[in-house]
Image 1 (cartoon, one colour):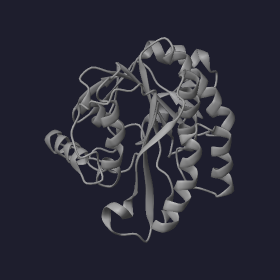
Image 2: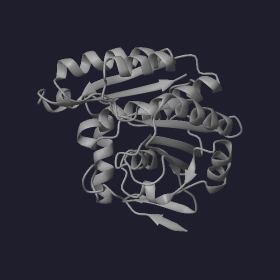
Image 3: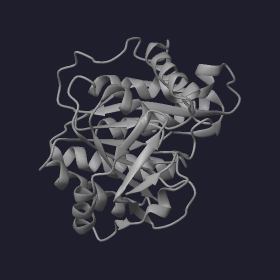
Image 4: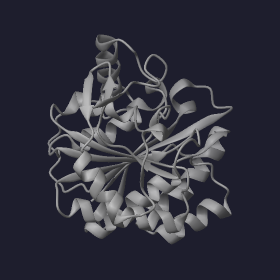
Length: 277
């Protein structure tokens, strides 16, 4: 069993167990967070969520809205899909026979489901090297460990994020989720390194088709406005999967930028927390 050691512990989130637990609790209680700790009393069927993946001090409170929403009815398996920022390894990669280590312990990859999803889509390759340095999935796991004591993951990272791939991967994820109780986590930040006002404007335009589960319109606005959302393919794949599973809408739980949180509004990154119901 391979151990996937943390790539960004001590950078994106605290590397020491108690500090990490404190950081996650503070994110839930933050004025930009849900303002309370799990479990929630939310009683609705949530098929998937969109979460940011920056350092906890910037995006943790926003991400915690989605995690709070799902905390009342947790599955034993999460498919976590995000961008491959490093561009290393396979175009679309999952991995098997491994555990992901964080300061809070180890989380096992569901190898059986990994093999199944790689058969459903020939675009998905089993390649652990693709995951070795990537933070977009890793930062979600400690928060999951704080809200759930028993779960496995299927990790997927994307270099190719075009629309055709999103439909293919989304369809494959939905097929898996029809057989097992799963929540899909699409990991993405929104606009990068623009002024606060412009980021809000750009991201408001892009979030509108997400809430309508309109993938074609999503890609149209993404390209027309040249929006720098890093995990757009992960967002689109999650939209496709959730729609196939019966979701009828997305709900924006919280949007804010790094500038809203830190007060430095000159060059910001946008973060959104969305659930599909």
